Length: 230
Image (cartoon, rainbow, N blue to C red; front, top):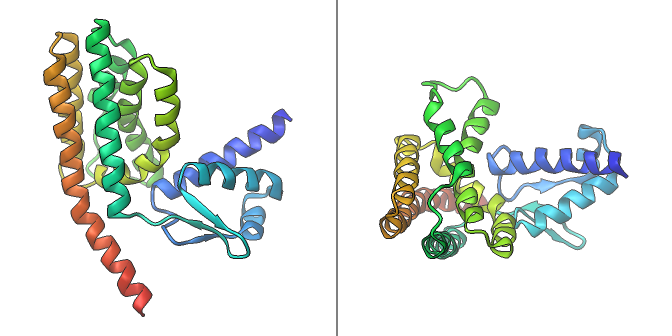
């Protein structure tokens, strides 16, 4: 059983990363037989992986048609942004109410981010994803810091879908520098007890991402429509 679980976890992490980074694009079909051969695994762990990815809204399985990667959508992204603002701002409010000011795990993430030398040119996709992952952990850790296990569980379920849009934003010009600046300032505001200011910055940070990405997503959706028209 342990071996089976390890195989399932490896497949899940691989396919999740491929979808989040856009290597497997929205609308693509995940063909069970083909993946089974390419990855050297049997069908049961693949089916379990598809089930989890569907729960994360990364794929959609339709009887007699197959399993397809969900497409990026401006409408979906807008709804995700609304949820993120609600949940993440609530997390900051909980920190304010509980009097928590020291967040060692969040501090560790921000220190790691500040210590990274951002390359002018990426060697490969692995390097890009590794950098992205180190930055994407900030928001999940912020929610976890609120100490509500049910909220954390719910947010984790949404985090992979959030990551697809974060990845699209992350490599836009100036995005990494802005993330670093905002994450550092948010942590310092929380530490100094300025929780209302931290919440306001967090909301502005997420709204900035929304504004930037809606323009990008509009182009992506238009390109998809043109492709389907041909």
